[in-house]
Image 1: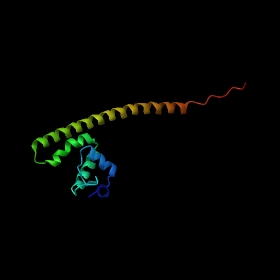
Image 2: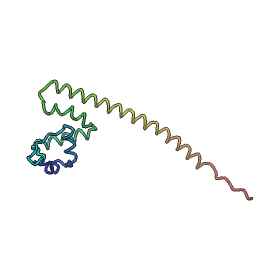
Image 3: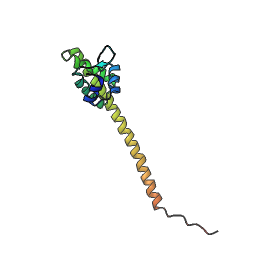
Length: 131
């Protein structure tokens, strides 16, 4: 199928499909006129790539995981893929911890601002003195 048909079947733009190919995530054959052609199995691969992107993985990391799909019976590939996934999970855990710290720091500022606003609303307005 051509790129337009693949785009329709997957809901992924032709531009994104070309990007996936540039990153080595997808392969296509070329017609004599240079048009990309994809197999029916590519629909499932694009779906998997989208899942991995939705999980927050970069194209670089996805490229390290896809060999496990291509060579499911290769223990070495499975081990490398497992290591890459655990490394990504650790990275995400560290990012979450940083976001929690950032949120906690913001909560401190919010509480201080709330106290300040309460103090301002409790303070009587100054009375203007006649000149």
